[in-house]
Image 1 (cartoon, rainbow, N blue to C red):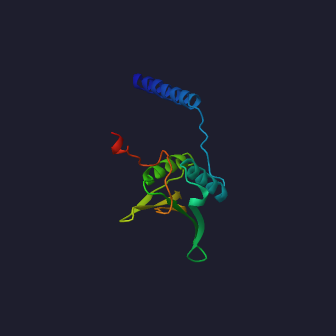
Image 2: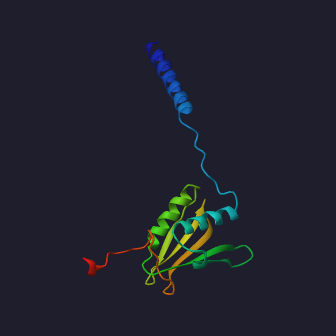
Image 3: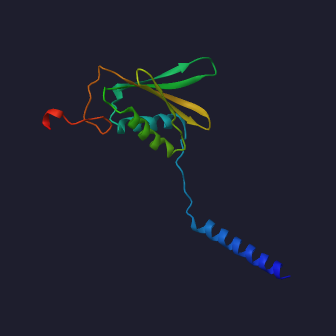
Length: 151
């Protein structure tokens, strides 16, 4: 009899605690990608935040067969531009929408392929490569070292 009372008290306490937690924790509304166009807008916004001008990337559609069609962003960056920082900043932005951004580095070119994925499906490919034709500008994503002659 004594064990039953203790069990009822413990169950009541557990229910009260669960109710308190359900009421006190705010409901978080995560952002969602509503369409393919919205996904492109988020990617382009992320590229602009990193100082990549519209004329430094192009978007084309890769078609393998009638079932496989994907947009590919080919992004040209100047020498010294930190592709890792670009990957990190885009990852932070897309994570807010529940999207993953795994990447693969290609050697010896040190180009990066980023894959915009959600629920195991790749929706976009971002190919980030170094272009010697582009001059670098002062930007937070550059690997800038101080001039040794000024030291």
